[in-house]
Image 1 (cartoon, helix red, strand yellow):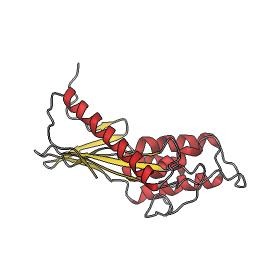
Image 2: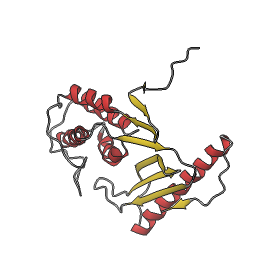
Image 3: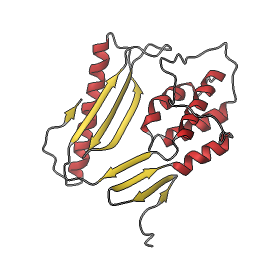
Length: 213
């Protein structure tokens, strides 16, 4: 066994310590992606995906090389471990891994341009005495123009720190916007119960109300 002191860098994740808490980011990982794609000098964008986008299986668009696209999307999926602000955009482009077109590659490039604008962003896990647990949930209604399924999004805060998040298509088509919301609420409740089980396994008693917003 060897004591390597405090963790600073592990599998592309950078860790910094301060009096406020622990900050993690993937700044170097982002610059590696920019260098690999030749976008170190590219223009930046303020959002990772177009608002009201209509990304679909477009057979009229020319096909692109599959290996490069899959490698890039795989890297972006890993990057979303510290960048939840790209989680939805990455979930969209990952749906076209096997029948990809020029339009899909453009969407991936837009995410990379967005990352270039703020490569140093990450998470600050602050110290605190209040172990509150709260989940924020939301869902659109039949937003996908491919199969008309809704997308659930949620994020959980533990002690005021963001610890889990997800953006995922629902398994079936919702018959109404209310049904889509209830499905998202069910997912949020499952996440709360899962976290409570984790705390119990760590011998941490949590008896306060859990919030679902």
